Image (tube, rainbow, N blue to C red; front, side):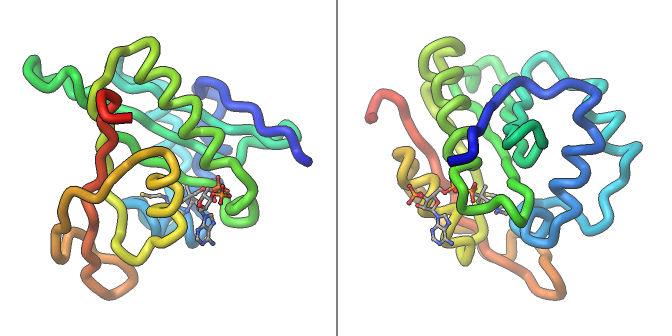
Length: 166
Ligand SMILES: CC(C)(COP(=O)(O)OP(=O)(O)OC[C@H]1O[C@@H](n2cnc3c(N)ncnc32)[C@H](O)[C@@H]1OP(=O)(O)O)[C@@H](O)C(=O)NCCC(=O)NCCS
Protein backbone atom coordinates (compact mmCIF):
# COMPACT_ATOMS: atom_id res chain seq x y z
CA UNK A 1 0.00 0.00 0.00
CA UNK A 2 1.30 3.51 -0.85
CA UNK A 3 2.46 5.54 2.11
CA UNK A 4 0.65 8.83 2.69
CA UNK A 5 2.50 11.54 4.57
CA UNK A 6 0.82 14.73 5.80
CA UNK A 7 2.85 17.85 6.59
CA UNK A 8 2.37 21.59 6.81
CA UNK A 9 2.52 23.21 3.40
CA UNK A 10 5.41 25.50 2.48
CA UNK A 11 5.57 28.34 -0.07
CA UNK A 12 7.40 25.97 -2.46
CA UNK A 13 4.31 23.74 -2.58
CA UNK A 14 2.30 26.42 -4.39
CA UNK A 15 2.61 25.00 -7.89
CA UNK A 16 1.81 21.45 -6.70
CA UNK A 17 -1.29 22.78 -4.92
CA UNK A 18 -2.22 24.67 -8.08
CA UNK A 19 -1.97 21.36 -9.97
CA UNK A 20 -4.42 19.73 -7.51
CA UNK A 21 -7.06 22.41 -8.12
CA UNK A 22 -6.45 22.30 -11.88
CA UNK A 23 -8.15 18.85 -11.80
CA UNK A 24 -11.81 18.86 -12.81
CA UNK A 25 -13.25 17.07 -9.75
CA UNK A 26 -11.09 19.14 -7.42
CA UNK A 27 -12.19 22.54 -8.75
CA UNK A 28 -15.78 21.44 -9.32
CA UNK A 29 -16.16 20.09 -5.76
CA UNK A 30 -14.77 23.27 -4.17
CA UNK A 31 -15.16 26.99 -4.85
CA UNK A 32 -12.11 27.10 -7.14
CA UNK A 33 -12.20 27.92 -10.86
CA UNK A 34 -10.79 26.02 -13.85
CA UNK A 35 -7.24 26.95 -14.92
CA UNK A 36 -6.05 28.22 -11.54
CA UNK A 37 -3.31 30.82 -11.60
CA UNK A 38 0.20 29.82 -10.54
CA UNK A 39 0.88 33.34 -9.29
CA UNK A 40 -2.41 33.34 -7.37
CA UNK A 41 -1.39 30.19 -5.48
CA UNK A 42 2.20 31.42 -5.03
CA UNK A 43 0.92 34.65 -3.42
CA UNK A 44 -1.54 32.73 -1.27
CA UNK A 45 1.02 30.21 0.01
CA UNK A 46 3.61 32.91 0.65
CA UNK A 47 1.17 34.88 2.82
CA UNK A 48 -0.72 32.35 4.93
CA UNK A 49 -2.44 34.32 7.75
CA UNK A 50 -1.63 33.38 11.36
CA UNK A 51 -5.10 31.90 11.91
CA UNK A 52 -4.82 29.61 8.85
CA UNK A 53 -3.20 26.16 8.85
CA UNK A 54 -2.46 24.63 5.49
CA UNK A 55 -1.51 21.00 4.99
CA UNK A 56 -0.42 18.91 2.07
CA UNK A 57 -0.50 15.15 1.70
CA UNK A 58 2.26 13.39 -0.20
CA UNK A 59 2.08 9.98 -1.78
CA UNK A 60 5.40 8.52 -2.87
CA UNK A 61 6.90 12.01 -2.56
CA UNK A 62 4.29 13.69 -4.78
CA UNK A 63 1.97 16.35 -3.35
CA UNK A 64 -1.52 14.98 -4.09
CA UNK A 65 -3.80 16.58 -1.48
CA UNK A 66 -4.32 19.88 0.29
CA UNK A 67 -6.37 21.05 3.24
CA UNK A 68 -6.72 24.64 4.45
CA UNK A 69 -8.17 25.32 7.90
CA UNK A 70 -9.11 28.76 9.21
CA UNK A 71 -9.75 29.47 12.89
CA UNK A 72 -12.55 32.05 13.24
CA UNK A 73 -10.99 35.36 14.20
CA UNK A 74 -14.11 36.83 15.81
CA UNK A 75 -13.46 36.88 19.57
CA UNK A 76 -16.68 35.02 20.34
CA UNK A 77 -16.13 32.35 17.68
CA UNK A 78 -12.56 31.37 18.44
CA UNK A 79 -13.78 27.91 19.41
CA UNK A 80 -14.81 27.33 15.78
CA UNK A 81 -13.08 26.96 12.43
CA UNK A 82 -13.78 25.92 8.87
CA UNK A 83 -11.80 24.13 6.21
CA UNK A 84 -11.71 23.14 2.56
CA UNK A 85 -9.82 20.31 0.94
CA UNK A 86 -9.01 18.74 -2.37
CA UNK A 87 -7.24 15.65 -3.66
CA UNK A 88 -5.80 15.25 -7.18
CA UNK A 89 -8.39 13.50 -9.31
CA UNK A 90 -6.25 10.41 -10.03
CA UNK A 91 -5.55 9.93 -6.31
CA UNK A 92 -9.09 10.14 -4.95
CA UNK A 93 -10.47 7.14 -3.09
CA UNK A 94 -7.01 6.05 -1.89
CA UNK A 95 -7.13 7.36 1.69
CA UNK A 96 -5.55 10.78 1.10
CA UNK A 97 -8.61 12.74 2.28
CA UNK A 98 -8.84 10.55 5.39
CA UNK A 99 -5.16 11.16 6.19
CA UNK A 100 -5.60 14.93 5.85
CA UNK A 101 -8.70 14.93 8.07
CA UNK A 102 -7.00 12.75 10.68
CA UNK A 103 -4.18 15.31 10.90
CA UNK A 104 -6.61 18.22 11.08
CA UNK A 105 -8.67 16.65 13.85
CA UNK A 106 -5.55 15.81 15.87
CA UNK A 107 -4.52 19.49 15.59
CA UNK A 108 -7.94 20.94 16.41
CA UNK A 109 -8.98 18.51 19.18
CA UNK A 110 -5.64 18.04 20.91
CA UNK A 111 -3.64 21.21 20.32
CA UNK A 112 -5.79 24.16 19.28
CA UNK A 113 -8.81 23.30 21.48
CA UNK A 114 -11.26 23.95 18.65
CA UNK A 115 -14.68 22.78 19.75
CA UNK A 116 -16.57 23.20 16.49
CA UNK A 117 -15.31 22.26 13.02
CA UNK A 118 -17.55 23.37 10.17
CA UNK A 119 -17.71 23.15 6.41
CA UNK A 120 -19.98 23.37 3.40
CA UNK A 121 -20.27 20.55 0.86
CA UNK A 122 -22.33 20.28 -2.32
CA UNK A 123 -25.36 18.12 -1.64
CA UNK A 124 -24.48 15.79 -4.55
CA UNK A 125 -20.86 15.26 -3.40
CA UNK A 126 -21.55 11.82 -1.94
CA UNK A 127 -17.94 10.76 -1.46
CA UNK A 128 -17.08 13.93 0.49
CA UNK A 129 -20.22 13.63 2.63
CA UNK A 130 -19.35 9.99 3.38
CA UNK A 131 -15.82 11.03 4.33
CA UNK A 132 -17.05 13.72 6.71
CA UNK A 133 -19.65 11.45 8.30
CA UNK A 134 -16.91 8.86 8.88
CA UNK A 135 -15.15 11.49 11.00
CA UNK A 136 -18.24 12.44 13.02
CA UNK A 137 -19.57 15.41 11.06
CA UNK A 138 -23.34 15.80 10.85
CA UNK A 139 -25.53 17.74 8.43
CA UNK A 140 -26.97 20.79 10.19
CA UNK A 141 -28.78 22.48 7.32
CA UNK A 142 -28.92 23.23 3.61
CA UNK A 143 -28.50 26.40 1.57
CA UNK A 144 -30.13 26.57 -1.85
CA UNK A 145 -28.27 27.99 -4.87
CA UNK A 146 -25.20 28.55 -2.71
CA UNK A 147 -22.75 28.53 -5.63
CA UNK A 148 -22.64 28.36 -9.42
CA UNK A 149 -21.00 25.26 -10.92
CA UNK A 150 -20.61 24.41 -14.58
CA UNK A 151 -23.70 26.34 -15.67
CA UNK A 152 -26.00 25.54 -12.76
CA UNK A 153 -26.72 26.69 -9.25
CA UNK A 154 -25.88 24.07 -6.64
CA UNK A 155 -27.02 23.57 -3.04
CA UNK A 156 -24.75 22.90 -0.11
CA UNK A 157 -25.11 21.16 3.20
CA UNK A 158 -23.65 22.82 6.24
CA UNK A 159 -21.86 20.12 8.23
CA UNK A 160 -20.17 20.34 11.62
CA UNK A 161 -18.34 18.20 14.14
CA UNK A 162 -18.41 19.18 17.81
CA UNK A 163 -15.59 17.58 19.75
CA UNK A 164 -17.65 17.59 22.94
CA UNK A 165 -20.00 15.15 21.21
CA UNK A 166 -17.48 12.71 19.75
C1 LIG B 1 -13.77 14.61 -1.18
C2 LIG B 1 -12.30 14.22 -1.19
C3 LIG B 1 -11.49 15.32 -0.49
C4 LIG B 1 -12.12 12.90 -0.44
O1 LIG B 1 -10.75 12.54 -0.46
P1 LIG B 1 -10.32 11.05 -0.84
O2 LIG B 1 -8.85 10.96 -0.76
O3 LIG B 1 -10.94 10.69 -2.13
O4 LIG B 1 -11.01 10.26 0.36
P2 LIG B 1 -10.61 8.82 0.97
O5 LIG B 1 -9.97 7.99 -0.08
O6 LIG B 1 -9.84 9.05 2.22
O7 LIG B 1 -12.03 8.23 1.31
C5 LIG B 1 -12.65 8.61 2.49
C6 LIG B 1 -14.06 8.11 2.56
O8 LIG B 1 -14.85 8.73 1.58
C7 LIG B 1 -15.83 7.81 1.14
N1 LIG B 1 -15.64 7.64 -0.28
C8 LIG B 1 -14.50 7.74 -0.99
N2 LIG B 1 -14.75 7.57 -2.31
C9 LIG B 1 -16.08 7.37 -2.40
C10 LIG B 1 -16.97 7.18 -3.48
N3 LIG B 1 -16.53 7.13 -4.76
N4 LIG B 1 -18.31 7.06 -3.21
C11 LIG B 1 -18.77 7.14 -1.94
N5 LIG B 1 -17.96 7.32 -0.89
C12 LIG B 1 -16.65 7.44 -1.12
C13 LIG B 1 -15.65 6.54 1.93
O9 LIG B 1 -16.46 6.68 3.09
C14 LIG B 1 -14.21 6.62 2.30
O10 LIG B 1 -13.91 5.96 3.49
P3 LIG B 1 -13.49 4.40 3.47
O11 LIG B 1 -12.47 4.24 2.41
O12 LIG B 1 -12.95 4.17 4.85
O13 LIG B 1 -14.76 3.68 3.17
C15 LIG B 1 -11.77 14.04 -2.65
O14 LIG B 1 -12.52 13.04 -3.28
C16 LIG B 1 -11.78 15.31 -3.46
O15 LIG B 1 -10.83 16.08 -3.45
N6 LIG B 1 -12.87 15.57 -4.23
C17 LIG B 1 -12.94 16.74 -5.09
C18 LIG B 1 -12.91 18.05 -4.31
C19 LIG B 1 -13.92 18.01 -3.20
O16 LIG B 1 -15.02 17.53 -3.35
N7 LIG B 1 -13.51 18.54 -2.03
C20 LIG B 1 -14.36 18.57 -0.84
C21 LIG B 1 -15.13 19.80 -0.82
S1 LIG B 1 -16.26 19.86 0.56
